[in-house]
Image (cartoon, rainbow, N blue to C red; front, side):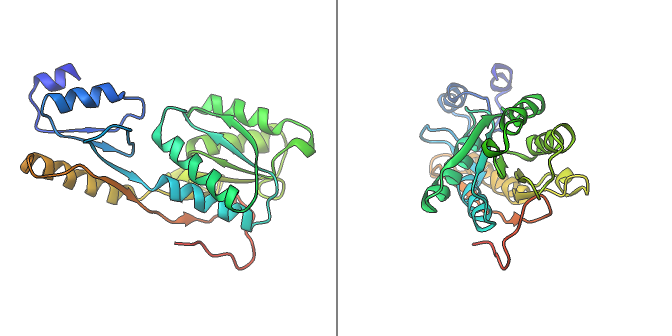
Length: 234
């Protein structure tokens, strides 16, 4: 970041989930416009562009409840990420609205091996302690979770366990996974990010910071049980 500021750049897009608020504040103090891409921070004066992670989490919970699931688990990403925080918050809120409790929770840290471990902890248990559905905080972890469920533990998806991810990365549509997932509309997020940064650069004294949250659809495939006649809300 010191090198970037030394180059006297006109603006910066920050996309790392682990980048601290202090760095963004330093850019502000240096007079360099900053836009956060697919992440947000609880500090004033910085524009962020994300998917609507809270709404996405809600949609997934509503989908799983409509499918008749009674024991719903969640495998979290890195606890310090705003994407993780907002997805889980929306998910829990929809469960609460339906008078349902979160049955099990583990942390995968957005990391493949840790997602493997989280899946083992959650599903390598007695049947009465095992979730019948799990929302995994992103698709990369969801694929790792599915591999453990099917190939290590011998459970069927979705007959024994429904799995839902988030992002709709290209491998989610592979027949090997056929993953039901929330789609992030990355093309629109990129357009909004570029437009916001250019606006801050061209009109630094009149452009106000804003938080843009772009809604996306739930892409229903074969990894989760589907309630008859269910349709997504928005």
